[in-house]
Image (tube, rainbow, N blue to C red; front, top):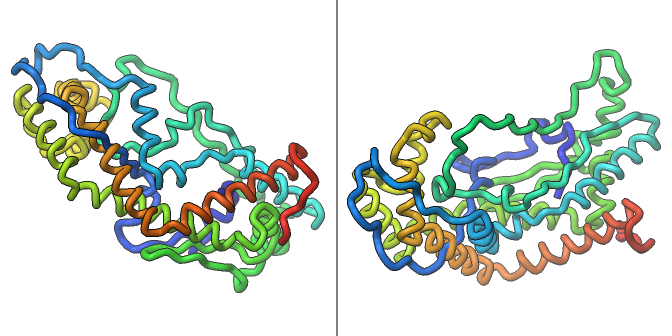
Length: 322
């Protein structure tokens, strides 16, 4: 896990083929056996009862089923904070003040997991306070030490020494030297590039598994049951994702009678349970074919967590060999 520094905005850091990118990281798949029956009755959209929906606990459990997604979204704020601290200390030794935003630990890990089967709960009916935007680093003031080429070199290293990890469809570039690179090496040692590579592979596997689950027989049956249920309640929709895509704004989702019908049909047909269970099966097959990925991810995660505890003064004095 790498904290968010200015380096994230440098050209060439994240490159991928068309159709990949950050949006792909928003893919999660979890599926369990197809539910028993379709929607009961033929209620009019305007007189539909409040939808039967999944509880937050049930949804959280579903989100954690796909094993690739679970690995990719393993929370590790402690390692990110340790890396941030290491970079600050490194810059201070070079005579520079570096103050990246602190790493905030999420209070609900489940909220960080992607949900790619359409709506899972009703949008709030009442106005809520806007979410606090992520804290970003302010650009350096003109003429300040932070705006100089020497400062950039100390932090980002030499442009000619950047290193790149590659997957099948994308690649990630990182500093090869400088304080950001040193901070990453402090936690991962000589496993730094392998860590980058396995994360790319997991990212691509998550993306591909979401597409592959569309071919799964049980998932296709669940989608047909959902579609028939929607038809019985007066709505025509191909699948939940396309339905959500047709409701582009929060206002549209609040106003549409299709939303409660969608949620009810998902609950009554067991759609989400099947979807996440089958996605989990697809992802597990990928992991079975690539056993080294989960093995190396787990080993390197433990390695950087041990180093992070040392950096933060919470662990032993053992050091990670660079």
